Image 1 (cartoon, rainbow, N blue to C red):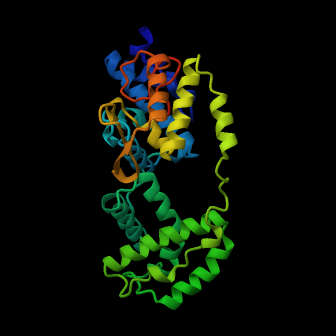
Image 2 (tube, rainbow, N blue to C red; image 1 turned 90 degrees about the horizontal axis):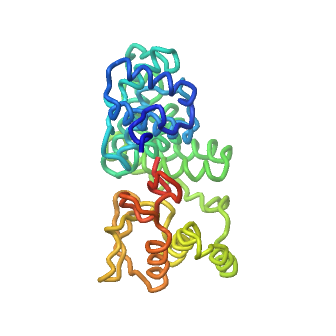
Image 3 (tube, one colour; image 1 turned 135 degrees about the vertical axis):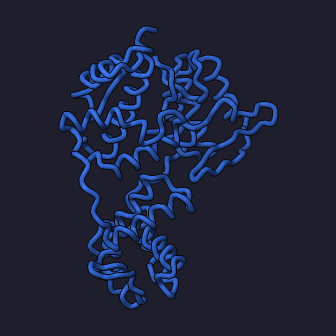
Length: 330
């Protein structure tokens, strides 16, 4: 178990890889205990994976991006889940020129004030995650900058329905189907927020079209029964990975669960006596669902014959050490 407390052996992927070992040396030079340095390197690894998954490099690690990462980390971690915990890491990356220096604070534009308030509304009142709220702000930025709070305006404009229709007529057709759908969804949320704030005298959410013709156009159709059976037959019940994959497929098929909901299942969520399973969904929603016999049999087969011995409390874990959550949230 030497690697468990060795900061230099923390697995790293993403943009931090090239300087990770230098960072280990810096933490040791600063006098951090080995266990603390290891935890900081694990935090660094999480940050690096998140940046890679978000399509961002170290040069884009701004305070707002750090805030988005912290919000994402809080959904799956309880330790080192504040911006302050990143100070030793970001401070070093800034000193070696990987991360840009902090820029002098400049006054926010009206559009930025509106978008910042919108993001906080989505996170605090609608229970959206930081990255999702930031994406909503991205989709509605053109509307905010051109109509709601244009440059030079001292306050938000009371946009009319005619102006909104004209904006949509010019902007939506130029977008891909998925982008148009996301823009319409985010814009409805913004219009509702602006009305609650008193910026708009009318609630204009009904003016935004449903963009129904694009809905689900880019998604594949559901699997047929034959395809599902082929997937299940491909899972070798004599092999631990086969047991695990079979249980995952049965759960997703029988209970219509999303992959993130399967990944979030904990051992304490399985009520064998009551025959139910607790499912943790979006926005903190928790549903109690019946544990059918075939789902129960698949889970028992995995827990008894496929799940490695580990202290992890998630139902599904990796088949190779370290035996942590199989589909860890990033």
